[in-house]
Structure formats: C-alpha cells, structure tokens
Image (tube, rainbow, N blue to C red; front, side, top):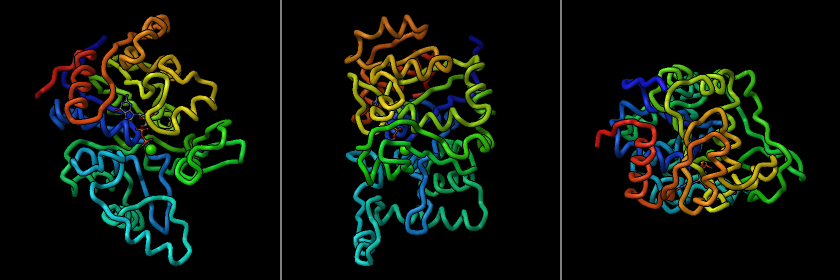
Length: 319
Ligand code: GDP
Ligand code: CA
C-alpha cells in the first residue's frame, strides 16, 4: 500500500447514510482533508424546480441543520407551500419543506444562468457555512430509472410515490455512459490517501458513481487505503430501497452481497456486530472484515464509527 500522507480522504456517498458518515468524519479530521463525491442520479424536477437530494442532505448534515429523525430535509421545516400547491391539483408526493424550497429556487436559478453543478453545490455549501469540499459526481445529467414488473419508474417515483413496492427487474443509469466525472473527481481518487464508500445504497447511490467513465477503473487501480461501511445491518437495510434493489438484481441482502458489489474497489469492509457471524465469509472473498457498531444514531456513534474507519485505514485523525 503506497501511503500518501498528504492526499485527501475521499468519500463516495449518497444521502442519508452518506451524510451521517460525512458528519462523523468531519468531527475527527480537518475539513480541508475531506472530499465527498456525491450521487446526483436521483435528482429530479418538481414544480419547475431542480431538486438534488443527496448533495443537499450532505450539506444540511454538515451544517448541523438536517432533520435527524427523518434523515433528510431541514430541522423544524414546515410544508405550507406544498399544502397550498395541492389546492391547484398538483401532485405533492415529493416532500419539499418551506426552508428547503429556497435551496431549490436558488439552484434552479443558477442552472438557468448556466452555472455548472460543481459551482452550485459549493455555493450552497458555502451559504450553509460548510467548508468540506463537496463534489457532485458529474456536471452532466444522469438519471436512475428502475425497471420494475409494473414498468419503468424514475427513481423518486419508484421510491417516494410508489414506496418501492413494485418488484425490481433491473436498474439503469441513463446518460452515465456519455457523462464525464465532474472536474476534481478523478483527481481526488488518484491523489487520495484513503477512499471510503459510505454506508449508502450500493445500487442507487454508489452504482451511478461507479457507472461514470473512468471512475471504476480509477478506484480499481488506486493504491490508497480503501474501505466501505456496510449499509446492510443484520440482513436488512435501515431504509428502502437498497434491499429491494439488491434482491431485484440478484444480490444477497447481507454483508456478503455488499462485499460482492464492491469487490475490487475495497480492501476492508466494516460490518456491524449484528453481522459478526458472516465475517469469515467476507474474509474468504479476499476482503478484510472489521466488526464494529455501524449504527449512527447520534453524534457520538457517528464519531466513533469515523474513528474506527480511519484507524482501519491507518489515517491519523486531528481531533
Ligand atoms: P439515500 O440517498 O437517502 O437513499 O441514502 P444513502 O444511499 O446514503 O443511504 C441509504 C442506506 O444507508 C440504507 O441502505 C441504510 O441502511 C444505510 N444507513 C443509513 N443510516 C445508517 C447507519 O447509521 N449505519 C449504517 N451502517 N447504514 C446506514
Ligand atoms: Ca439518494
């Protein structure tokens, strides 16, 4: 393992699980050492507004403003504009709070002015006082479409409108082949001291990042210390639709299924104590298992997991 003591700690992540780990990491290392590469394939237009859930959750979590119960949205937000919109007969199944609305208005306005997503995400982060470098996975449009037995469904429709109830047959990332990783993404991976795959949905959150040109190759040949935290705990996902998608694509919904998806991209997998019995199976797959508490219910557990993870990667902490 080549160590690059000055290289960044690079985290591939989605929304809820990703943002919790980012918060833990930000508690223990200087922010200028951290770079998040965030999924944007479940972005969607609603009511003329461009909504980018995963970058927003990560931003809100790092700002300490995320609604911890839900895992998304701003704490204490209200939904009056959405309730008012219902009067006109519009579909309001996608929840956007009143304060959250301002973020989407701002983002959409910048997009209309031709500002690339990289600059928009850092502008929103700056406005929330977040100094960790947040990168969208791409500045191009990539769209997750879930192929179900009831037909093709855009990701948010599958998850939020239909509650992930239709059996998944396949998942495709429209536009991924033509898309380029955002400026800074490949550089971050190449220069990384450590690469972390957050406990995010392996199919819908990490899948689109891996599907971008050159990203999987860069990860596969990286000599950085590489680890993932399993989002599957005790044979289940803490929230839909990771399990539904893994089943649909023929993966076991347990830590071996996660290891199978990430094989070649990680050397170490952190699994929960609830899955300790499966550690030998992970080892047989050529991945070093580390058993620890992976549930991040509060700041103390997030911080403890971040420390355990960095320790496993031989990365020194700053706090
Ligand atoms: P999304 O974009 O909001 O779907 O969020 P992510 O893709 O980042 O995370 C979803 C996954 O995170 C689910 O499979 C959850 O099981 C997992 N997850 C959420 N919170 C935690 C946690 O505290 N610990 C672990 N190990 N996984 C978590
Ligand atoms: Ca997401």
